[in-house]
Image (cartoon, rainbow, N blue to C red; front, side):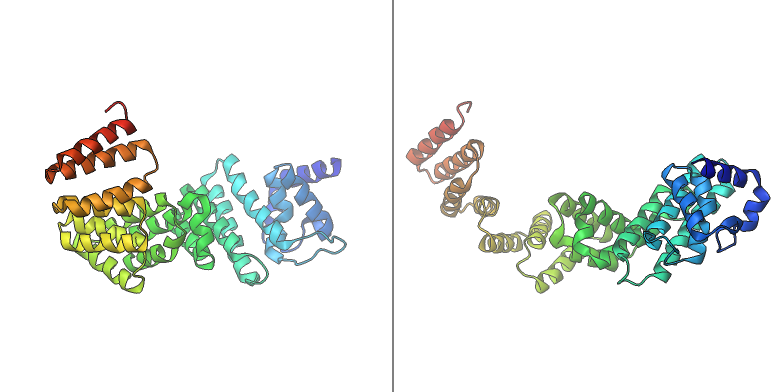
Length: 340
């Protein structure tokens, strides 16, 4: 440790020497690679990032795969450490131009990583993710940082769509789409949504709905797009539900009824059964409404849902002037919920 402190002090004392060494791909002061690396690593672990950079910059300049007499050296791992060091040192550096230089150097290291290593040697997915996070962490010092971060995340997405879509509760896929929307890259954004949708959570699906609304100039344009998507995958429930909502909003009731029936045929869930029941009620088809309401009651998950359904059945019977059945289901609703 004393040797480490003395060597670090020597470097800090001589700024002109430090500048002279900045372009060298060799360890400083004529040291062996093993000795310089040892000092770099010690300073890095102690979070002394200035000395760490001074004794480690030769690593990213020379890109050595191995160090003589040091079996545990990993070039990839230490390039990652150097990027961290260059980023962290900006947090204690007052000079804006020097801070910018540190960030630029870190970004150069990212470029060197992708130039030096093949996809078989390192995980490009992890490195693109790291690069995107770096852009966002130091966004104040990088021009168009958010757009550049989105580009890095997009490259990671293309390598593993499922993993990135699920990562961070959808944060990274949202960053990608927001970047594409800001650049008005409609087709690319829609392509990303289509590719990631099978892995998206309900919350992320809602975000996709918002993005689509921002991308399309009119409901008609959005309907046309979803209808074309449905041709490729007619069993896609999410696409069908989006179309159902749009058809209802645009008062295209015949098409809405057709979609509701398709959803029920694909998945006769409580929600899809209730949708058919509501459609029948709106069309005053009370026989059909009662049929689907009774089916939905069997699928209801709690007493509140059953009480609501019982009242709807009662109303349907009243509209058919079947008063005895109407009273029976009204009493049933009270049994399910005594506050009624």
